[in-house]
Length: 401
Image (tube, rainbow, N blue to C red; front, side, top):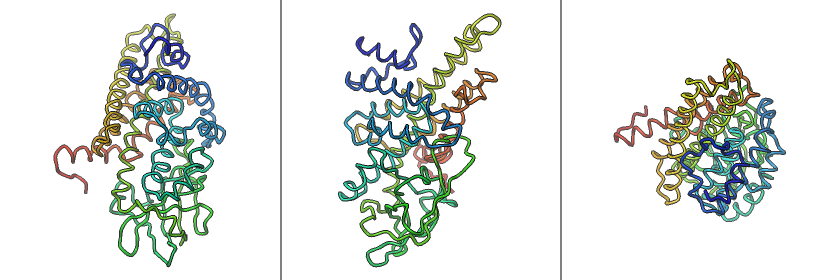
């Protein structure tokens, strides 16, 4: 990192004076100076504005509309369409997760699976009609693939149907765990065409007759993300709402590949926050007349957390390079997602233990992070499914039942 940028990075709380920086390998230093400045400024704003303001809504299981509007004003609703390297975008997603993992899920899924889906699979008219509002978070969207009875087996088991009736489609079925499902204006809905059995996708406005959304209550983590059960009772949409590029599950899989890699950046961000919190606590907390950080077991715990974070950041740096070159494969994305969410779980477990009794209080944030990381380990393809994707690539033998 150039000397001119160090004050901005310090103001962003990326490191404490004289101490090991969180970015041990100086990955951000590989960015062009313009992107370094953008990242340092974004980090400062996210730490000062978003991090403290997210705690109350997370505890209340609410979506903070004011924070979402602020994120939209800063261009976070269309990160994939803005100029910038893959590494910059990934590090920005990590800083979003460092501020709040569940709000980063809102931003990430919105970019990867909503805006990204319309941009990649939609028509020119659909892009013109929906992307401007989505880019500002003035319009909210959902990605509806998972169903009540089909999660890991959704590729072959998808049961929601679409029937062509003249120039309209009639959609029937149910979806589950749909992010922002209760607040979305549009739902990108995957359904199986009754005529040819091919999986297709449709833009369903949520004010259409026959559509209903019910919030899933009592979640352990990602509490800002409003997940929902959706039902489609003969919901009619016009032909112009069908996404022309969404033909077969392979189209969805291409989107999920980048999305799974993005979860790796969330795991990096959660660990950035955990290491930051744990170290500050170890330096501030006094026991037996000394800072906690003076004790060998505490230093060993911090070293383990730094190690997991640095391994995660190094892997995602290479994933970003692979994406930049257009070479990312599903086994690579699955390896990143499964490995890094496992490491994040380990890091948060160590960090929670380091905080002792305060580690179980969400006011101290470590417990909040621990709960959110549990969800990262399961969503966007469970840890086990992603592990088996890697195993299939490693052996040439599928272990899927």
